[in-house]
Image 1: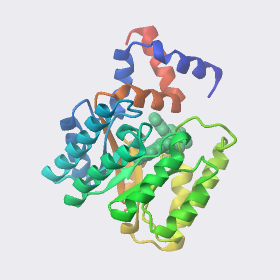
Image 2: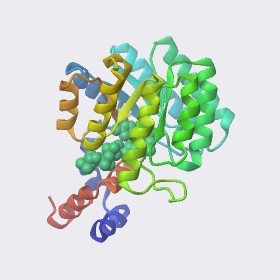
Image 3: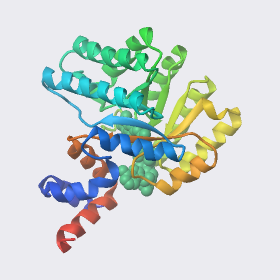
Image 4: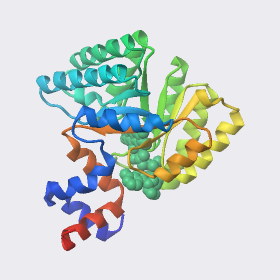
Length: 299
Ligand code: FDA
């Protein structure tokens, strides 16, 4: 990120929420569950799957975590009611991971029970590195009782290849992404080439072991690199999928889908849209420039 963009990103906390919201709109389905349902229906109509996500993270009160758990179950109810081709993504810090591991486990298992009843799948997102050990521990515990859950791993973390070597032995279901949090260089690759190389190395390990993998990227180089590995292992379309975020690189999304690959879109919604969008802005410096232009011109 150049100095100009870094300066704008630093200004984001003082930008009026109304302006941030205007730029957030393409990335979020809306405030309400009905908004996410509509988005999923539209994507399903063109043959694209969804993974719905109630925005929120780092809950610090047990009541909030219970509320988030109930909201996740509402999403599963809606998926079943409207027969959506969608599953659920969630963050364990929403369910109280940082407060009490066992309490978080109870909440997660309540969601996994509901998902099992509906024959639906739950994806556990990966958060910052302070949560990695506990997230993997809870995922591994869940897999002892539930087959309908999967985990996310981040290619920028130096530990991930070794984690995946262990996880493939339990026939895990993965989403592989680069990783979005700012991590120290002792534990994370920083250069794009290193992250991409690790991404493809890990993907090869997952696919070689026949683990179902969601290839989550908007990076042309990684899409091309993934195609080569898929071709090499002669995988069937049902053995993997591509995943992208709502509102990001829709032309690439359509191209991958038209090439005959399964595509799933991450559909976030909810009142806690602000933190999610700030992360998206920090990730994409161009957005920060647009925000500044809007402030200066009033458009
Ligand atoms: P890269 O960042 O190089 O982007 C490639 C190109 O895509 C950019 O040049 C730009 O054109 C476009 N682009 C990417 N992001 C954009 C954005 N926000 N706005 C506009 N354009 C954008 N991370 C994590 O740590 N834990 C998780 O659980 C998840 N979950 C997750 C689910 C799904 C379905 C996806 C697609 C991604 C995640 N991520 C995530 C985020 C992921 O780690 C990563 O930060 C982003 O996907 C961006 O990385 P790319 O591979 O797209 O490459």
